[in-house]
Length: 359
Image (tube, rainbow, N blue to C red; front, side, top):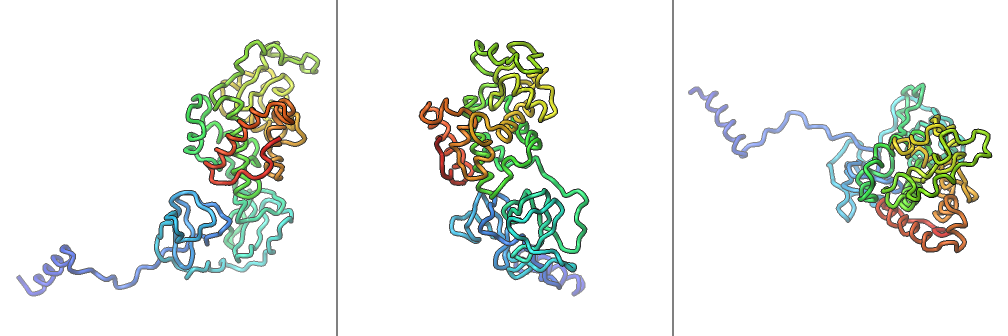
């Protein structure tokens, strides 16, 4: 064996045995830095953030715990390029600074206080670009803004695992996919305000839904004797589906011919003539519930959506659904049942319940 061949053989043996490590001729470059960690941001399992020149990945839901943290929630992914600071965006920029409370139409580009640029995905009244990530997305300065800003109406602040935890005994009709598909009907639902407010609204909606349906068990109203009572013949459109066709259905138990008519007109569905769609199509059922939540005051003074996003509180959502039947001492046990469920659900989502829980 020649001396060269012998040297090659010995080298291979040393590498294979772990006695020798091959050093690359050029050092490997560090990974690019993820978006800087923000105290106000909510991070879910798998989300990444950078801090002090290192990338970290969240193992589960967290907020306000700076990486590397003390609870073990952050996994250190190693050093990243940028030395802990995000490089300035490429290209020349002369976009204005973001100002809270300023109306920004979709496609607007602003410079935030962290030096980064953001583009409005949807019209908004000056929501914080870091907090309201549905309304804003990061923008690389110098790139062309999209002709039609991207939307993501299918996302939901409640994961499927959390939904299953909230409704362990639900009827198979009430699918998570049906709920997600229904979100496109009212994009502001659980997408308005801070991350905390968004989760509080989702929890409030689902807590009331739980109460109305016995944990998403019942698709239709159980007292069939009530069915003929939900036709108001004095309405100009009458009851074309039949006297007893407008009984309670779906997550909010939509009832009365005038509600089916209004919901159908708003959603572009023939609910007045075919109310059975609400009990046969999960997405339709969820859409009618979100329609009521977003647009109807009911016996209250505001929509349930406005109650949650303006700080009026969970108690006002109860008033919007059942009014004096439960509120003002009408049925304190029923109110407590709703409040207890809401407190359980915000716990699952990792946020506080807020104030004004009772009505």
